[in-house]
Every structure is written in C-alpha cells, then in structure tokens.
Image (cartoon, rainbow, N blue to C red; front, side):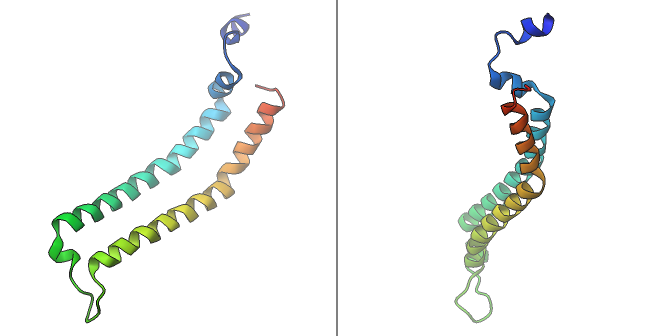
Length: 112
C-alpha cells in the first residue's frame, strides 16, 4: 500500500528516474562525460589565454616555415574535438548503448 501511495502521483518518467537501472546509467554517463568536458574546457581556455596573453610564444615559428605555435594549437582544437567525438562514440557503442537499450525495453515492457 505504501508503494502505491508513494507512486500514485508520479509520472512514468519519475518512476523510471527513481529506478536503480536509470541511476546507474546516469552515473556511468557522468563518469565519462564530465571528465572529458573538463579536459576539453581546460585545453580550450589554455589556448584562448595563451592567444591573448602569450603573443610571443604563440607567434613563434616552427623551424623556417610559416607555421606558428598558435596555428598548431588552433588546429589542435579541431583535432581534439574529433578525437573526443570518436572516443565517445566508441565508448557509447561498446559499453553504454547496450545498457540503455535494455532499460528502454524494460520501460516499454511496462516493468517500471
């Protein structure tokens, strides 16, 4: 009876959100996404700050070419974005999507 009274005013999403399976899925997602986001933001802001305050360093030429440290760092921003995207896609395909799919089937089956 207590369970019925507790869940009577809840929406289906609220019941799912309370479930252990959903909470585990959120924890696993956060363990991957938050560190990657923090790493990227540190890298991005380091680039912006260096570009703004370290003109000499960022304008230093690599060898005798027209390529500068700033240009390499700027291109590195694009490369890091693609690398993070590929890492996320691989992680999601290998360890996240299966659990999310199982939870979805569990929800659509009316078990929650």
